[in-house]
Image (tube, rainbow, N blue to C red; front, side, top):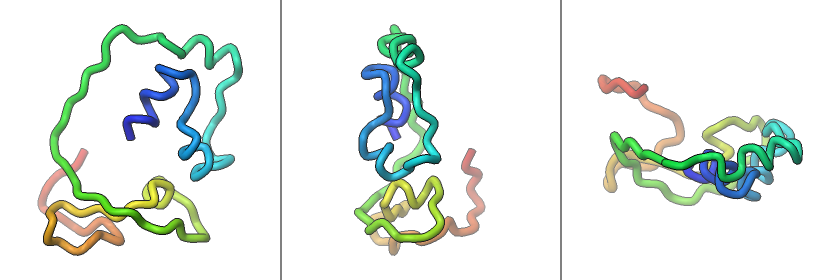
Length: 94
C-alpha cells in the first residue's frame, strides 16, 4: 500500500509489481506528470489505526479487483484462518 502512494511521489511512477498486477486498469503518468509529481512533497505523515496479518496468495485468473491485485490473504489475528472475503463485523472500517 505504501508503494502505491509513495513511489510516484519519490520516483515519479507506480511500483513495477503494481503495474504488472493491475495492468491496463492502472492509469499511467505522462512524462510531464511524472516530473511534476516526483519529489513534490516535503512531509509524509502516517496515521495508523489497526494491523492485519498477511500471507502470500497465488494470483488467480479471472475477474481482477483491488483485493486480488494484492495477491495476499489477510486476517485480523494470528489464529484466525486467512480471509477469502471480508466477513460481516460489528466494527466500523472506514
